Image (cartoon, rainbow, N blue to C red; front, side, top):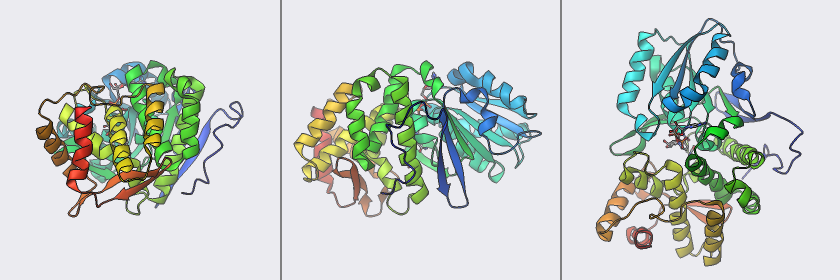
Length: 390
Ligand code: NAD
Ligand code: GLY
């Protein structure tokens, strides 16, 4: 994999206060800006003037209370007319009903094609905001201002937008790239520890799928990661964004085999989230953490990775404090076979399923992922049984 735009993660921490990465996609490119305090002057990182425009700032109620006024005041000072759009915090807001309500609110405020939407929040607000921006009056510009670690390292980059359905996660959505991604690392200071840890799972994903050196870096710094050391957080964000930018630049719409690798553990994880009920009991990153271990188990049974490799990954999970079992997620199932059948059925509804079956992302070794579309149902179900009985 080509990582030309990835800097040395050990580079001098004082050399540059604001880091930039470019995402190059068909029809344009945009920058990811990473640094402390960027939300005080977000206009510095938006590639056009906001004067005279209508700007919609979408947030959830928690984030709005913390950062909404600051961002709104800065944008208003640029001569824009600003309207705040609000949803409740949590996965349930990625819904048809919120999408409909917010679309109507924007139409009532006379949204036009030169309006701008700012998604200020975690992945929920980012995915919902991107979807709104891509559909309202057939598409307006939008800016990602992510406020969770998960959104910093994954969801704000790459233009996947979505809402959830009763049939599964993210099944209605678009590919629609933002014009800028503004990552203010200071916002992590208010993030609840569980939400931080959910983001770390997606960081670890990059080490597992494309970058052994980064995986080793995470091993070396596990205790600093567990303590949420700000310098290590910034390194994790930069390196993760660099990996994601490189992958998205190669394969914007998940058609040429690279972007699909970002879904390691997600087919399992999405099914677990759906079973848990999107009510905050199981966070997306937590489900992905356990889902990645399930994918690792599959990789081990295929002989791609050794039992020693599995133990090595599990040790990193333990040192950081990531969930490893369904019990850690608070999921307990008494009827094993019914649950195995139910989870498998949900996995068949995943976006990566085709008429030929499910495409599984597995590891060929630590630091390298591949797709396998030929796994037998019973083979996968054995992994589910193992985790349910663990
Ligand atoms: P989230 O958006 O629900 O945010 C988590 C919680 O943290 C919320 O309650 C929120 O109010 C609160 N919060 C956010 N920022 C805060 C801050 N700075 N201080 C205090 N509280 C804060 O969850 P998330 O983990 O950011 O995102 C999960 C979503 O992202 C899922 O729906 C998932 O499907 C999606 N996702 C999308 C992509 C993509 O490529 N589009 C990639 C990964 C995940
Ligand atoms: N998080 C998966 C992707 O962006 O493709």
